[in-house]
Length: 62
Image (cartoon, rainbow, N blue to C red):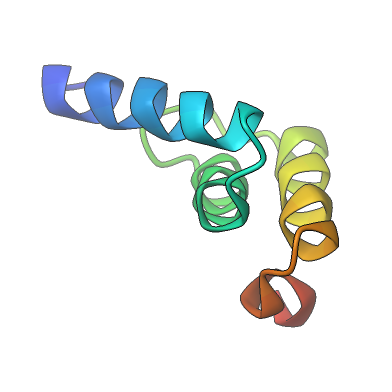
């Protein structure tokens, strides 16, 4: 993992923890695709559901 990917992942995780719906969606995508981290379907579903609960319509379609 590159330093930039690590910084991106840390930043998105921080925003997601603070109920940022778009960040929750992107974090779910990262876990689903294994982008910057290992694939983790359980965490992907968790973050995509949180994003949907917080109003991200893309998460509902994912």
